[in-house]
Length: 66
Figure 1 (cartoon, one colour):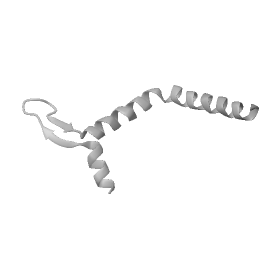
Figure 2 (tube, one colour):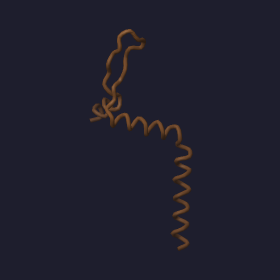
Figure 3 (cartoon, helix red, strand yellow):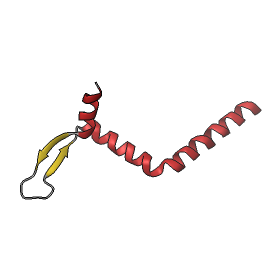
Figure 4 (tube, helix red, strand yellow):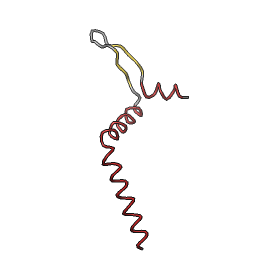
């Protein structure tokens, strides 16, 4: 099962003639979306977690006060 997920994430390998490096990878559309989400998270993890913590703190304080 782990090999299936690894192959899905990496994509199918194909070669392009006349280019260096000539190896390219064709991803399934769901793998492309997963790559986009992961790269977005890795670039913006600081404000994502700050926002989650702030919204959680506000909702907990609202529930305590009401």
